[in-house]
Structures are given as structure tokens and as C-alpha cells.
Amino acid sequence: MRRQYIKILIIANFLLSPIALKAEPLVVLTYNNASELADRNNQFAQNPDFFAKHTIVPGESLNLIIQKYYDQSGLNMSFLQLAIISLNDHAFRNKNINYMIADETIHLPSINQISKLMKGIDFNLNTAVDQKNENIYFYGG
Image (cartoon, rainbow, N blue to C red; front, top):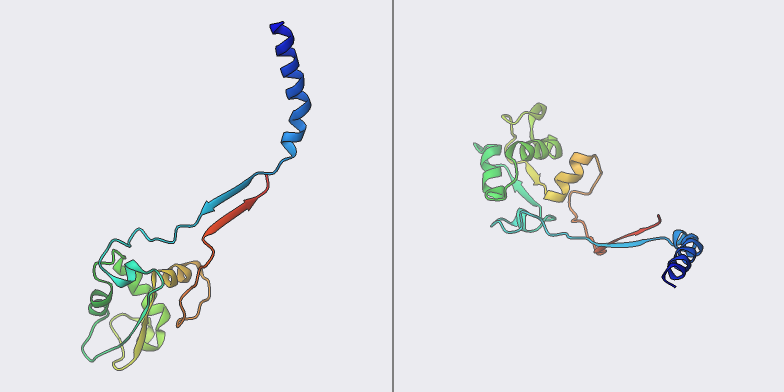
């Protein structure tokens, strides 16, 4: 009796397996927009879309500006320097960190803008990214 039961299970599995193979999986992942820097006491770290504008004062250095705005953000100063210089070439002679032009207004990029800059994705300096979809859907096998 037991052997017959096992044979029936094997035959049923063999007959039903093509049906199971044709089914397509559906995976839903929750998109987590929270930054690992969010627990730090800095607006840039708490909101990855936050950006600012700054007017250069005579005698001011880029490192002082970075320290003023990005202090305790956890972001790498070298990357910040490169991003700021890349986005504000009008305020730096020959893209040199040591030759800032006084009274120029510079854009201090958000974390998301720095990420897009590194990936070569175009973006508008004056708008934040609005990500309303919080789920990632995957269809297929």
C-alpha cells in the first residue's frame, strides 16, 4: 500500500511539474530611501535631497565652506571638493580649489545630486528628486 502511495505521488509530481514551471515569480522589494547617514546631526545627511547655495566671501576657502555646511555629515571632503568644483566651474579659475572668485554664488549639492554627478546623470541644480514609488517590482523568471 505504501509503495502504491509513493508511486502515485511521483506520477502526480511528474504530471504537475510542467504547470509549476510555467508560473512566473513576482517579487516585491520595499525601497528604503533612508540614508545610513540619517542619524547624523547635519541637514545634508538627514535629507539626501537637501542642497544649499552659498555666496563666497573674500578670504574664504572651499574647505571652510565645506566644514560650515557639511560638518558631521560623514561625507568625504575630497569627493565634496570635486563635486562642488564640477558643478560651479564659474566660481573657480581653471577648476582650481585655490582660486575661488569672491561674490560668486555656488551650489552645494545634495547627496543624491553627488551620486548622479558620479554616475554621469544630468539633473537640474535647483530641484530635489521626488521619489513617490516606494516599491520595486520584478516580474519574470
